[in-house]
Length: 132
Figure 1: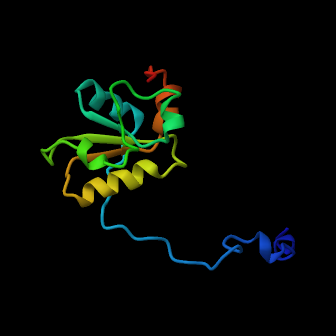
Figure 2: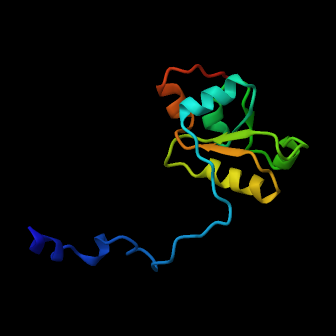
């Protein structure tokens, strides 16, 4: 069983298409939440930001969510940097909401959440979506 592993060509090894590099280290620690926690925040009127592509946004988004994929995204942020906000994208494989949340945190916002389950997780748990 173990001998078979040594027969794998090196091209099948992780990172074989380029140099192996260390994973990035971020100064901002994400406050990740599950769909249930996001639902509670949504019911409290917390701001939600959709970090998906425009095509994905058009298939449905969390009610009242703000589309974040615009050039002047800083204008979409509240003046009060302690205002709670939730960022999401498609699913846990998508990193757009992570990147957006980190950028907002770099601006000094302190109450930033990221929902890794994204719009797919929101839908799979029976929550409704809006269409543009």
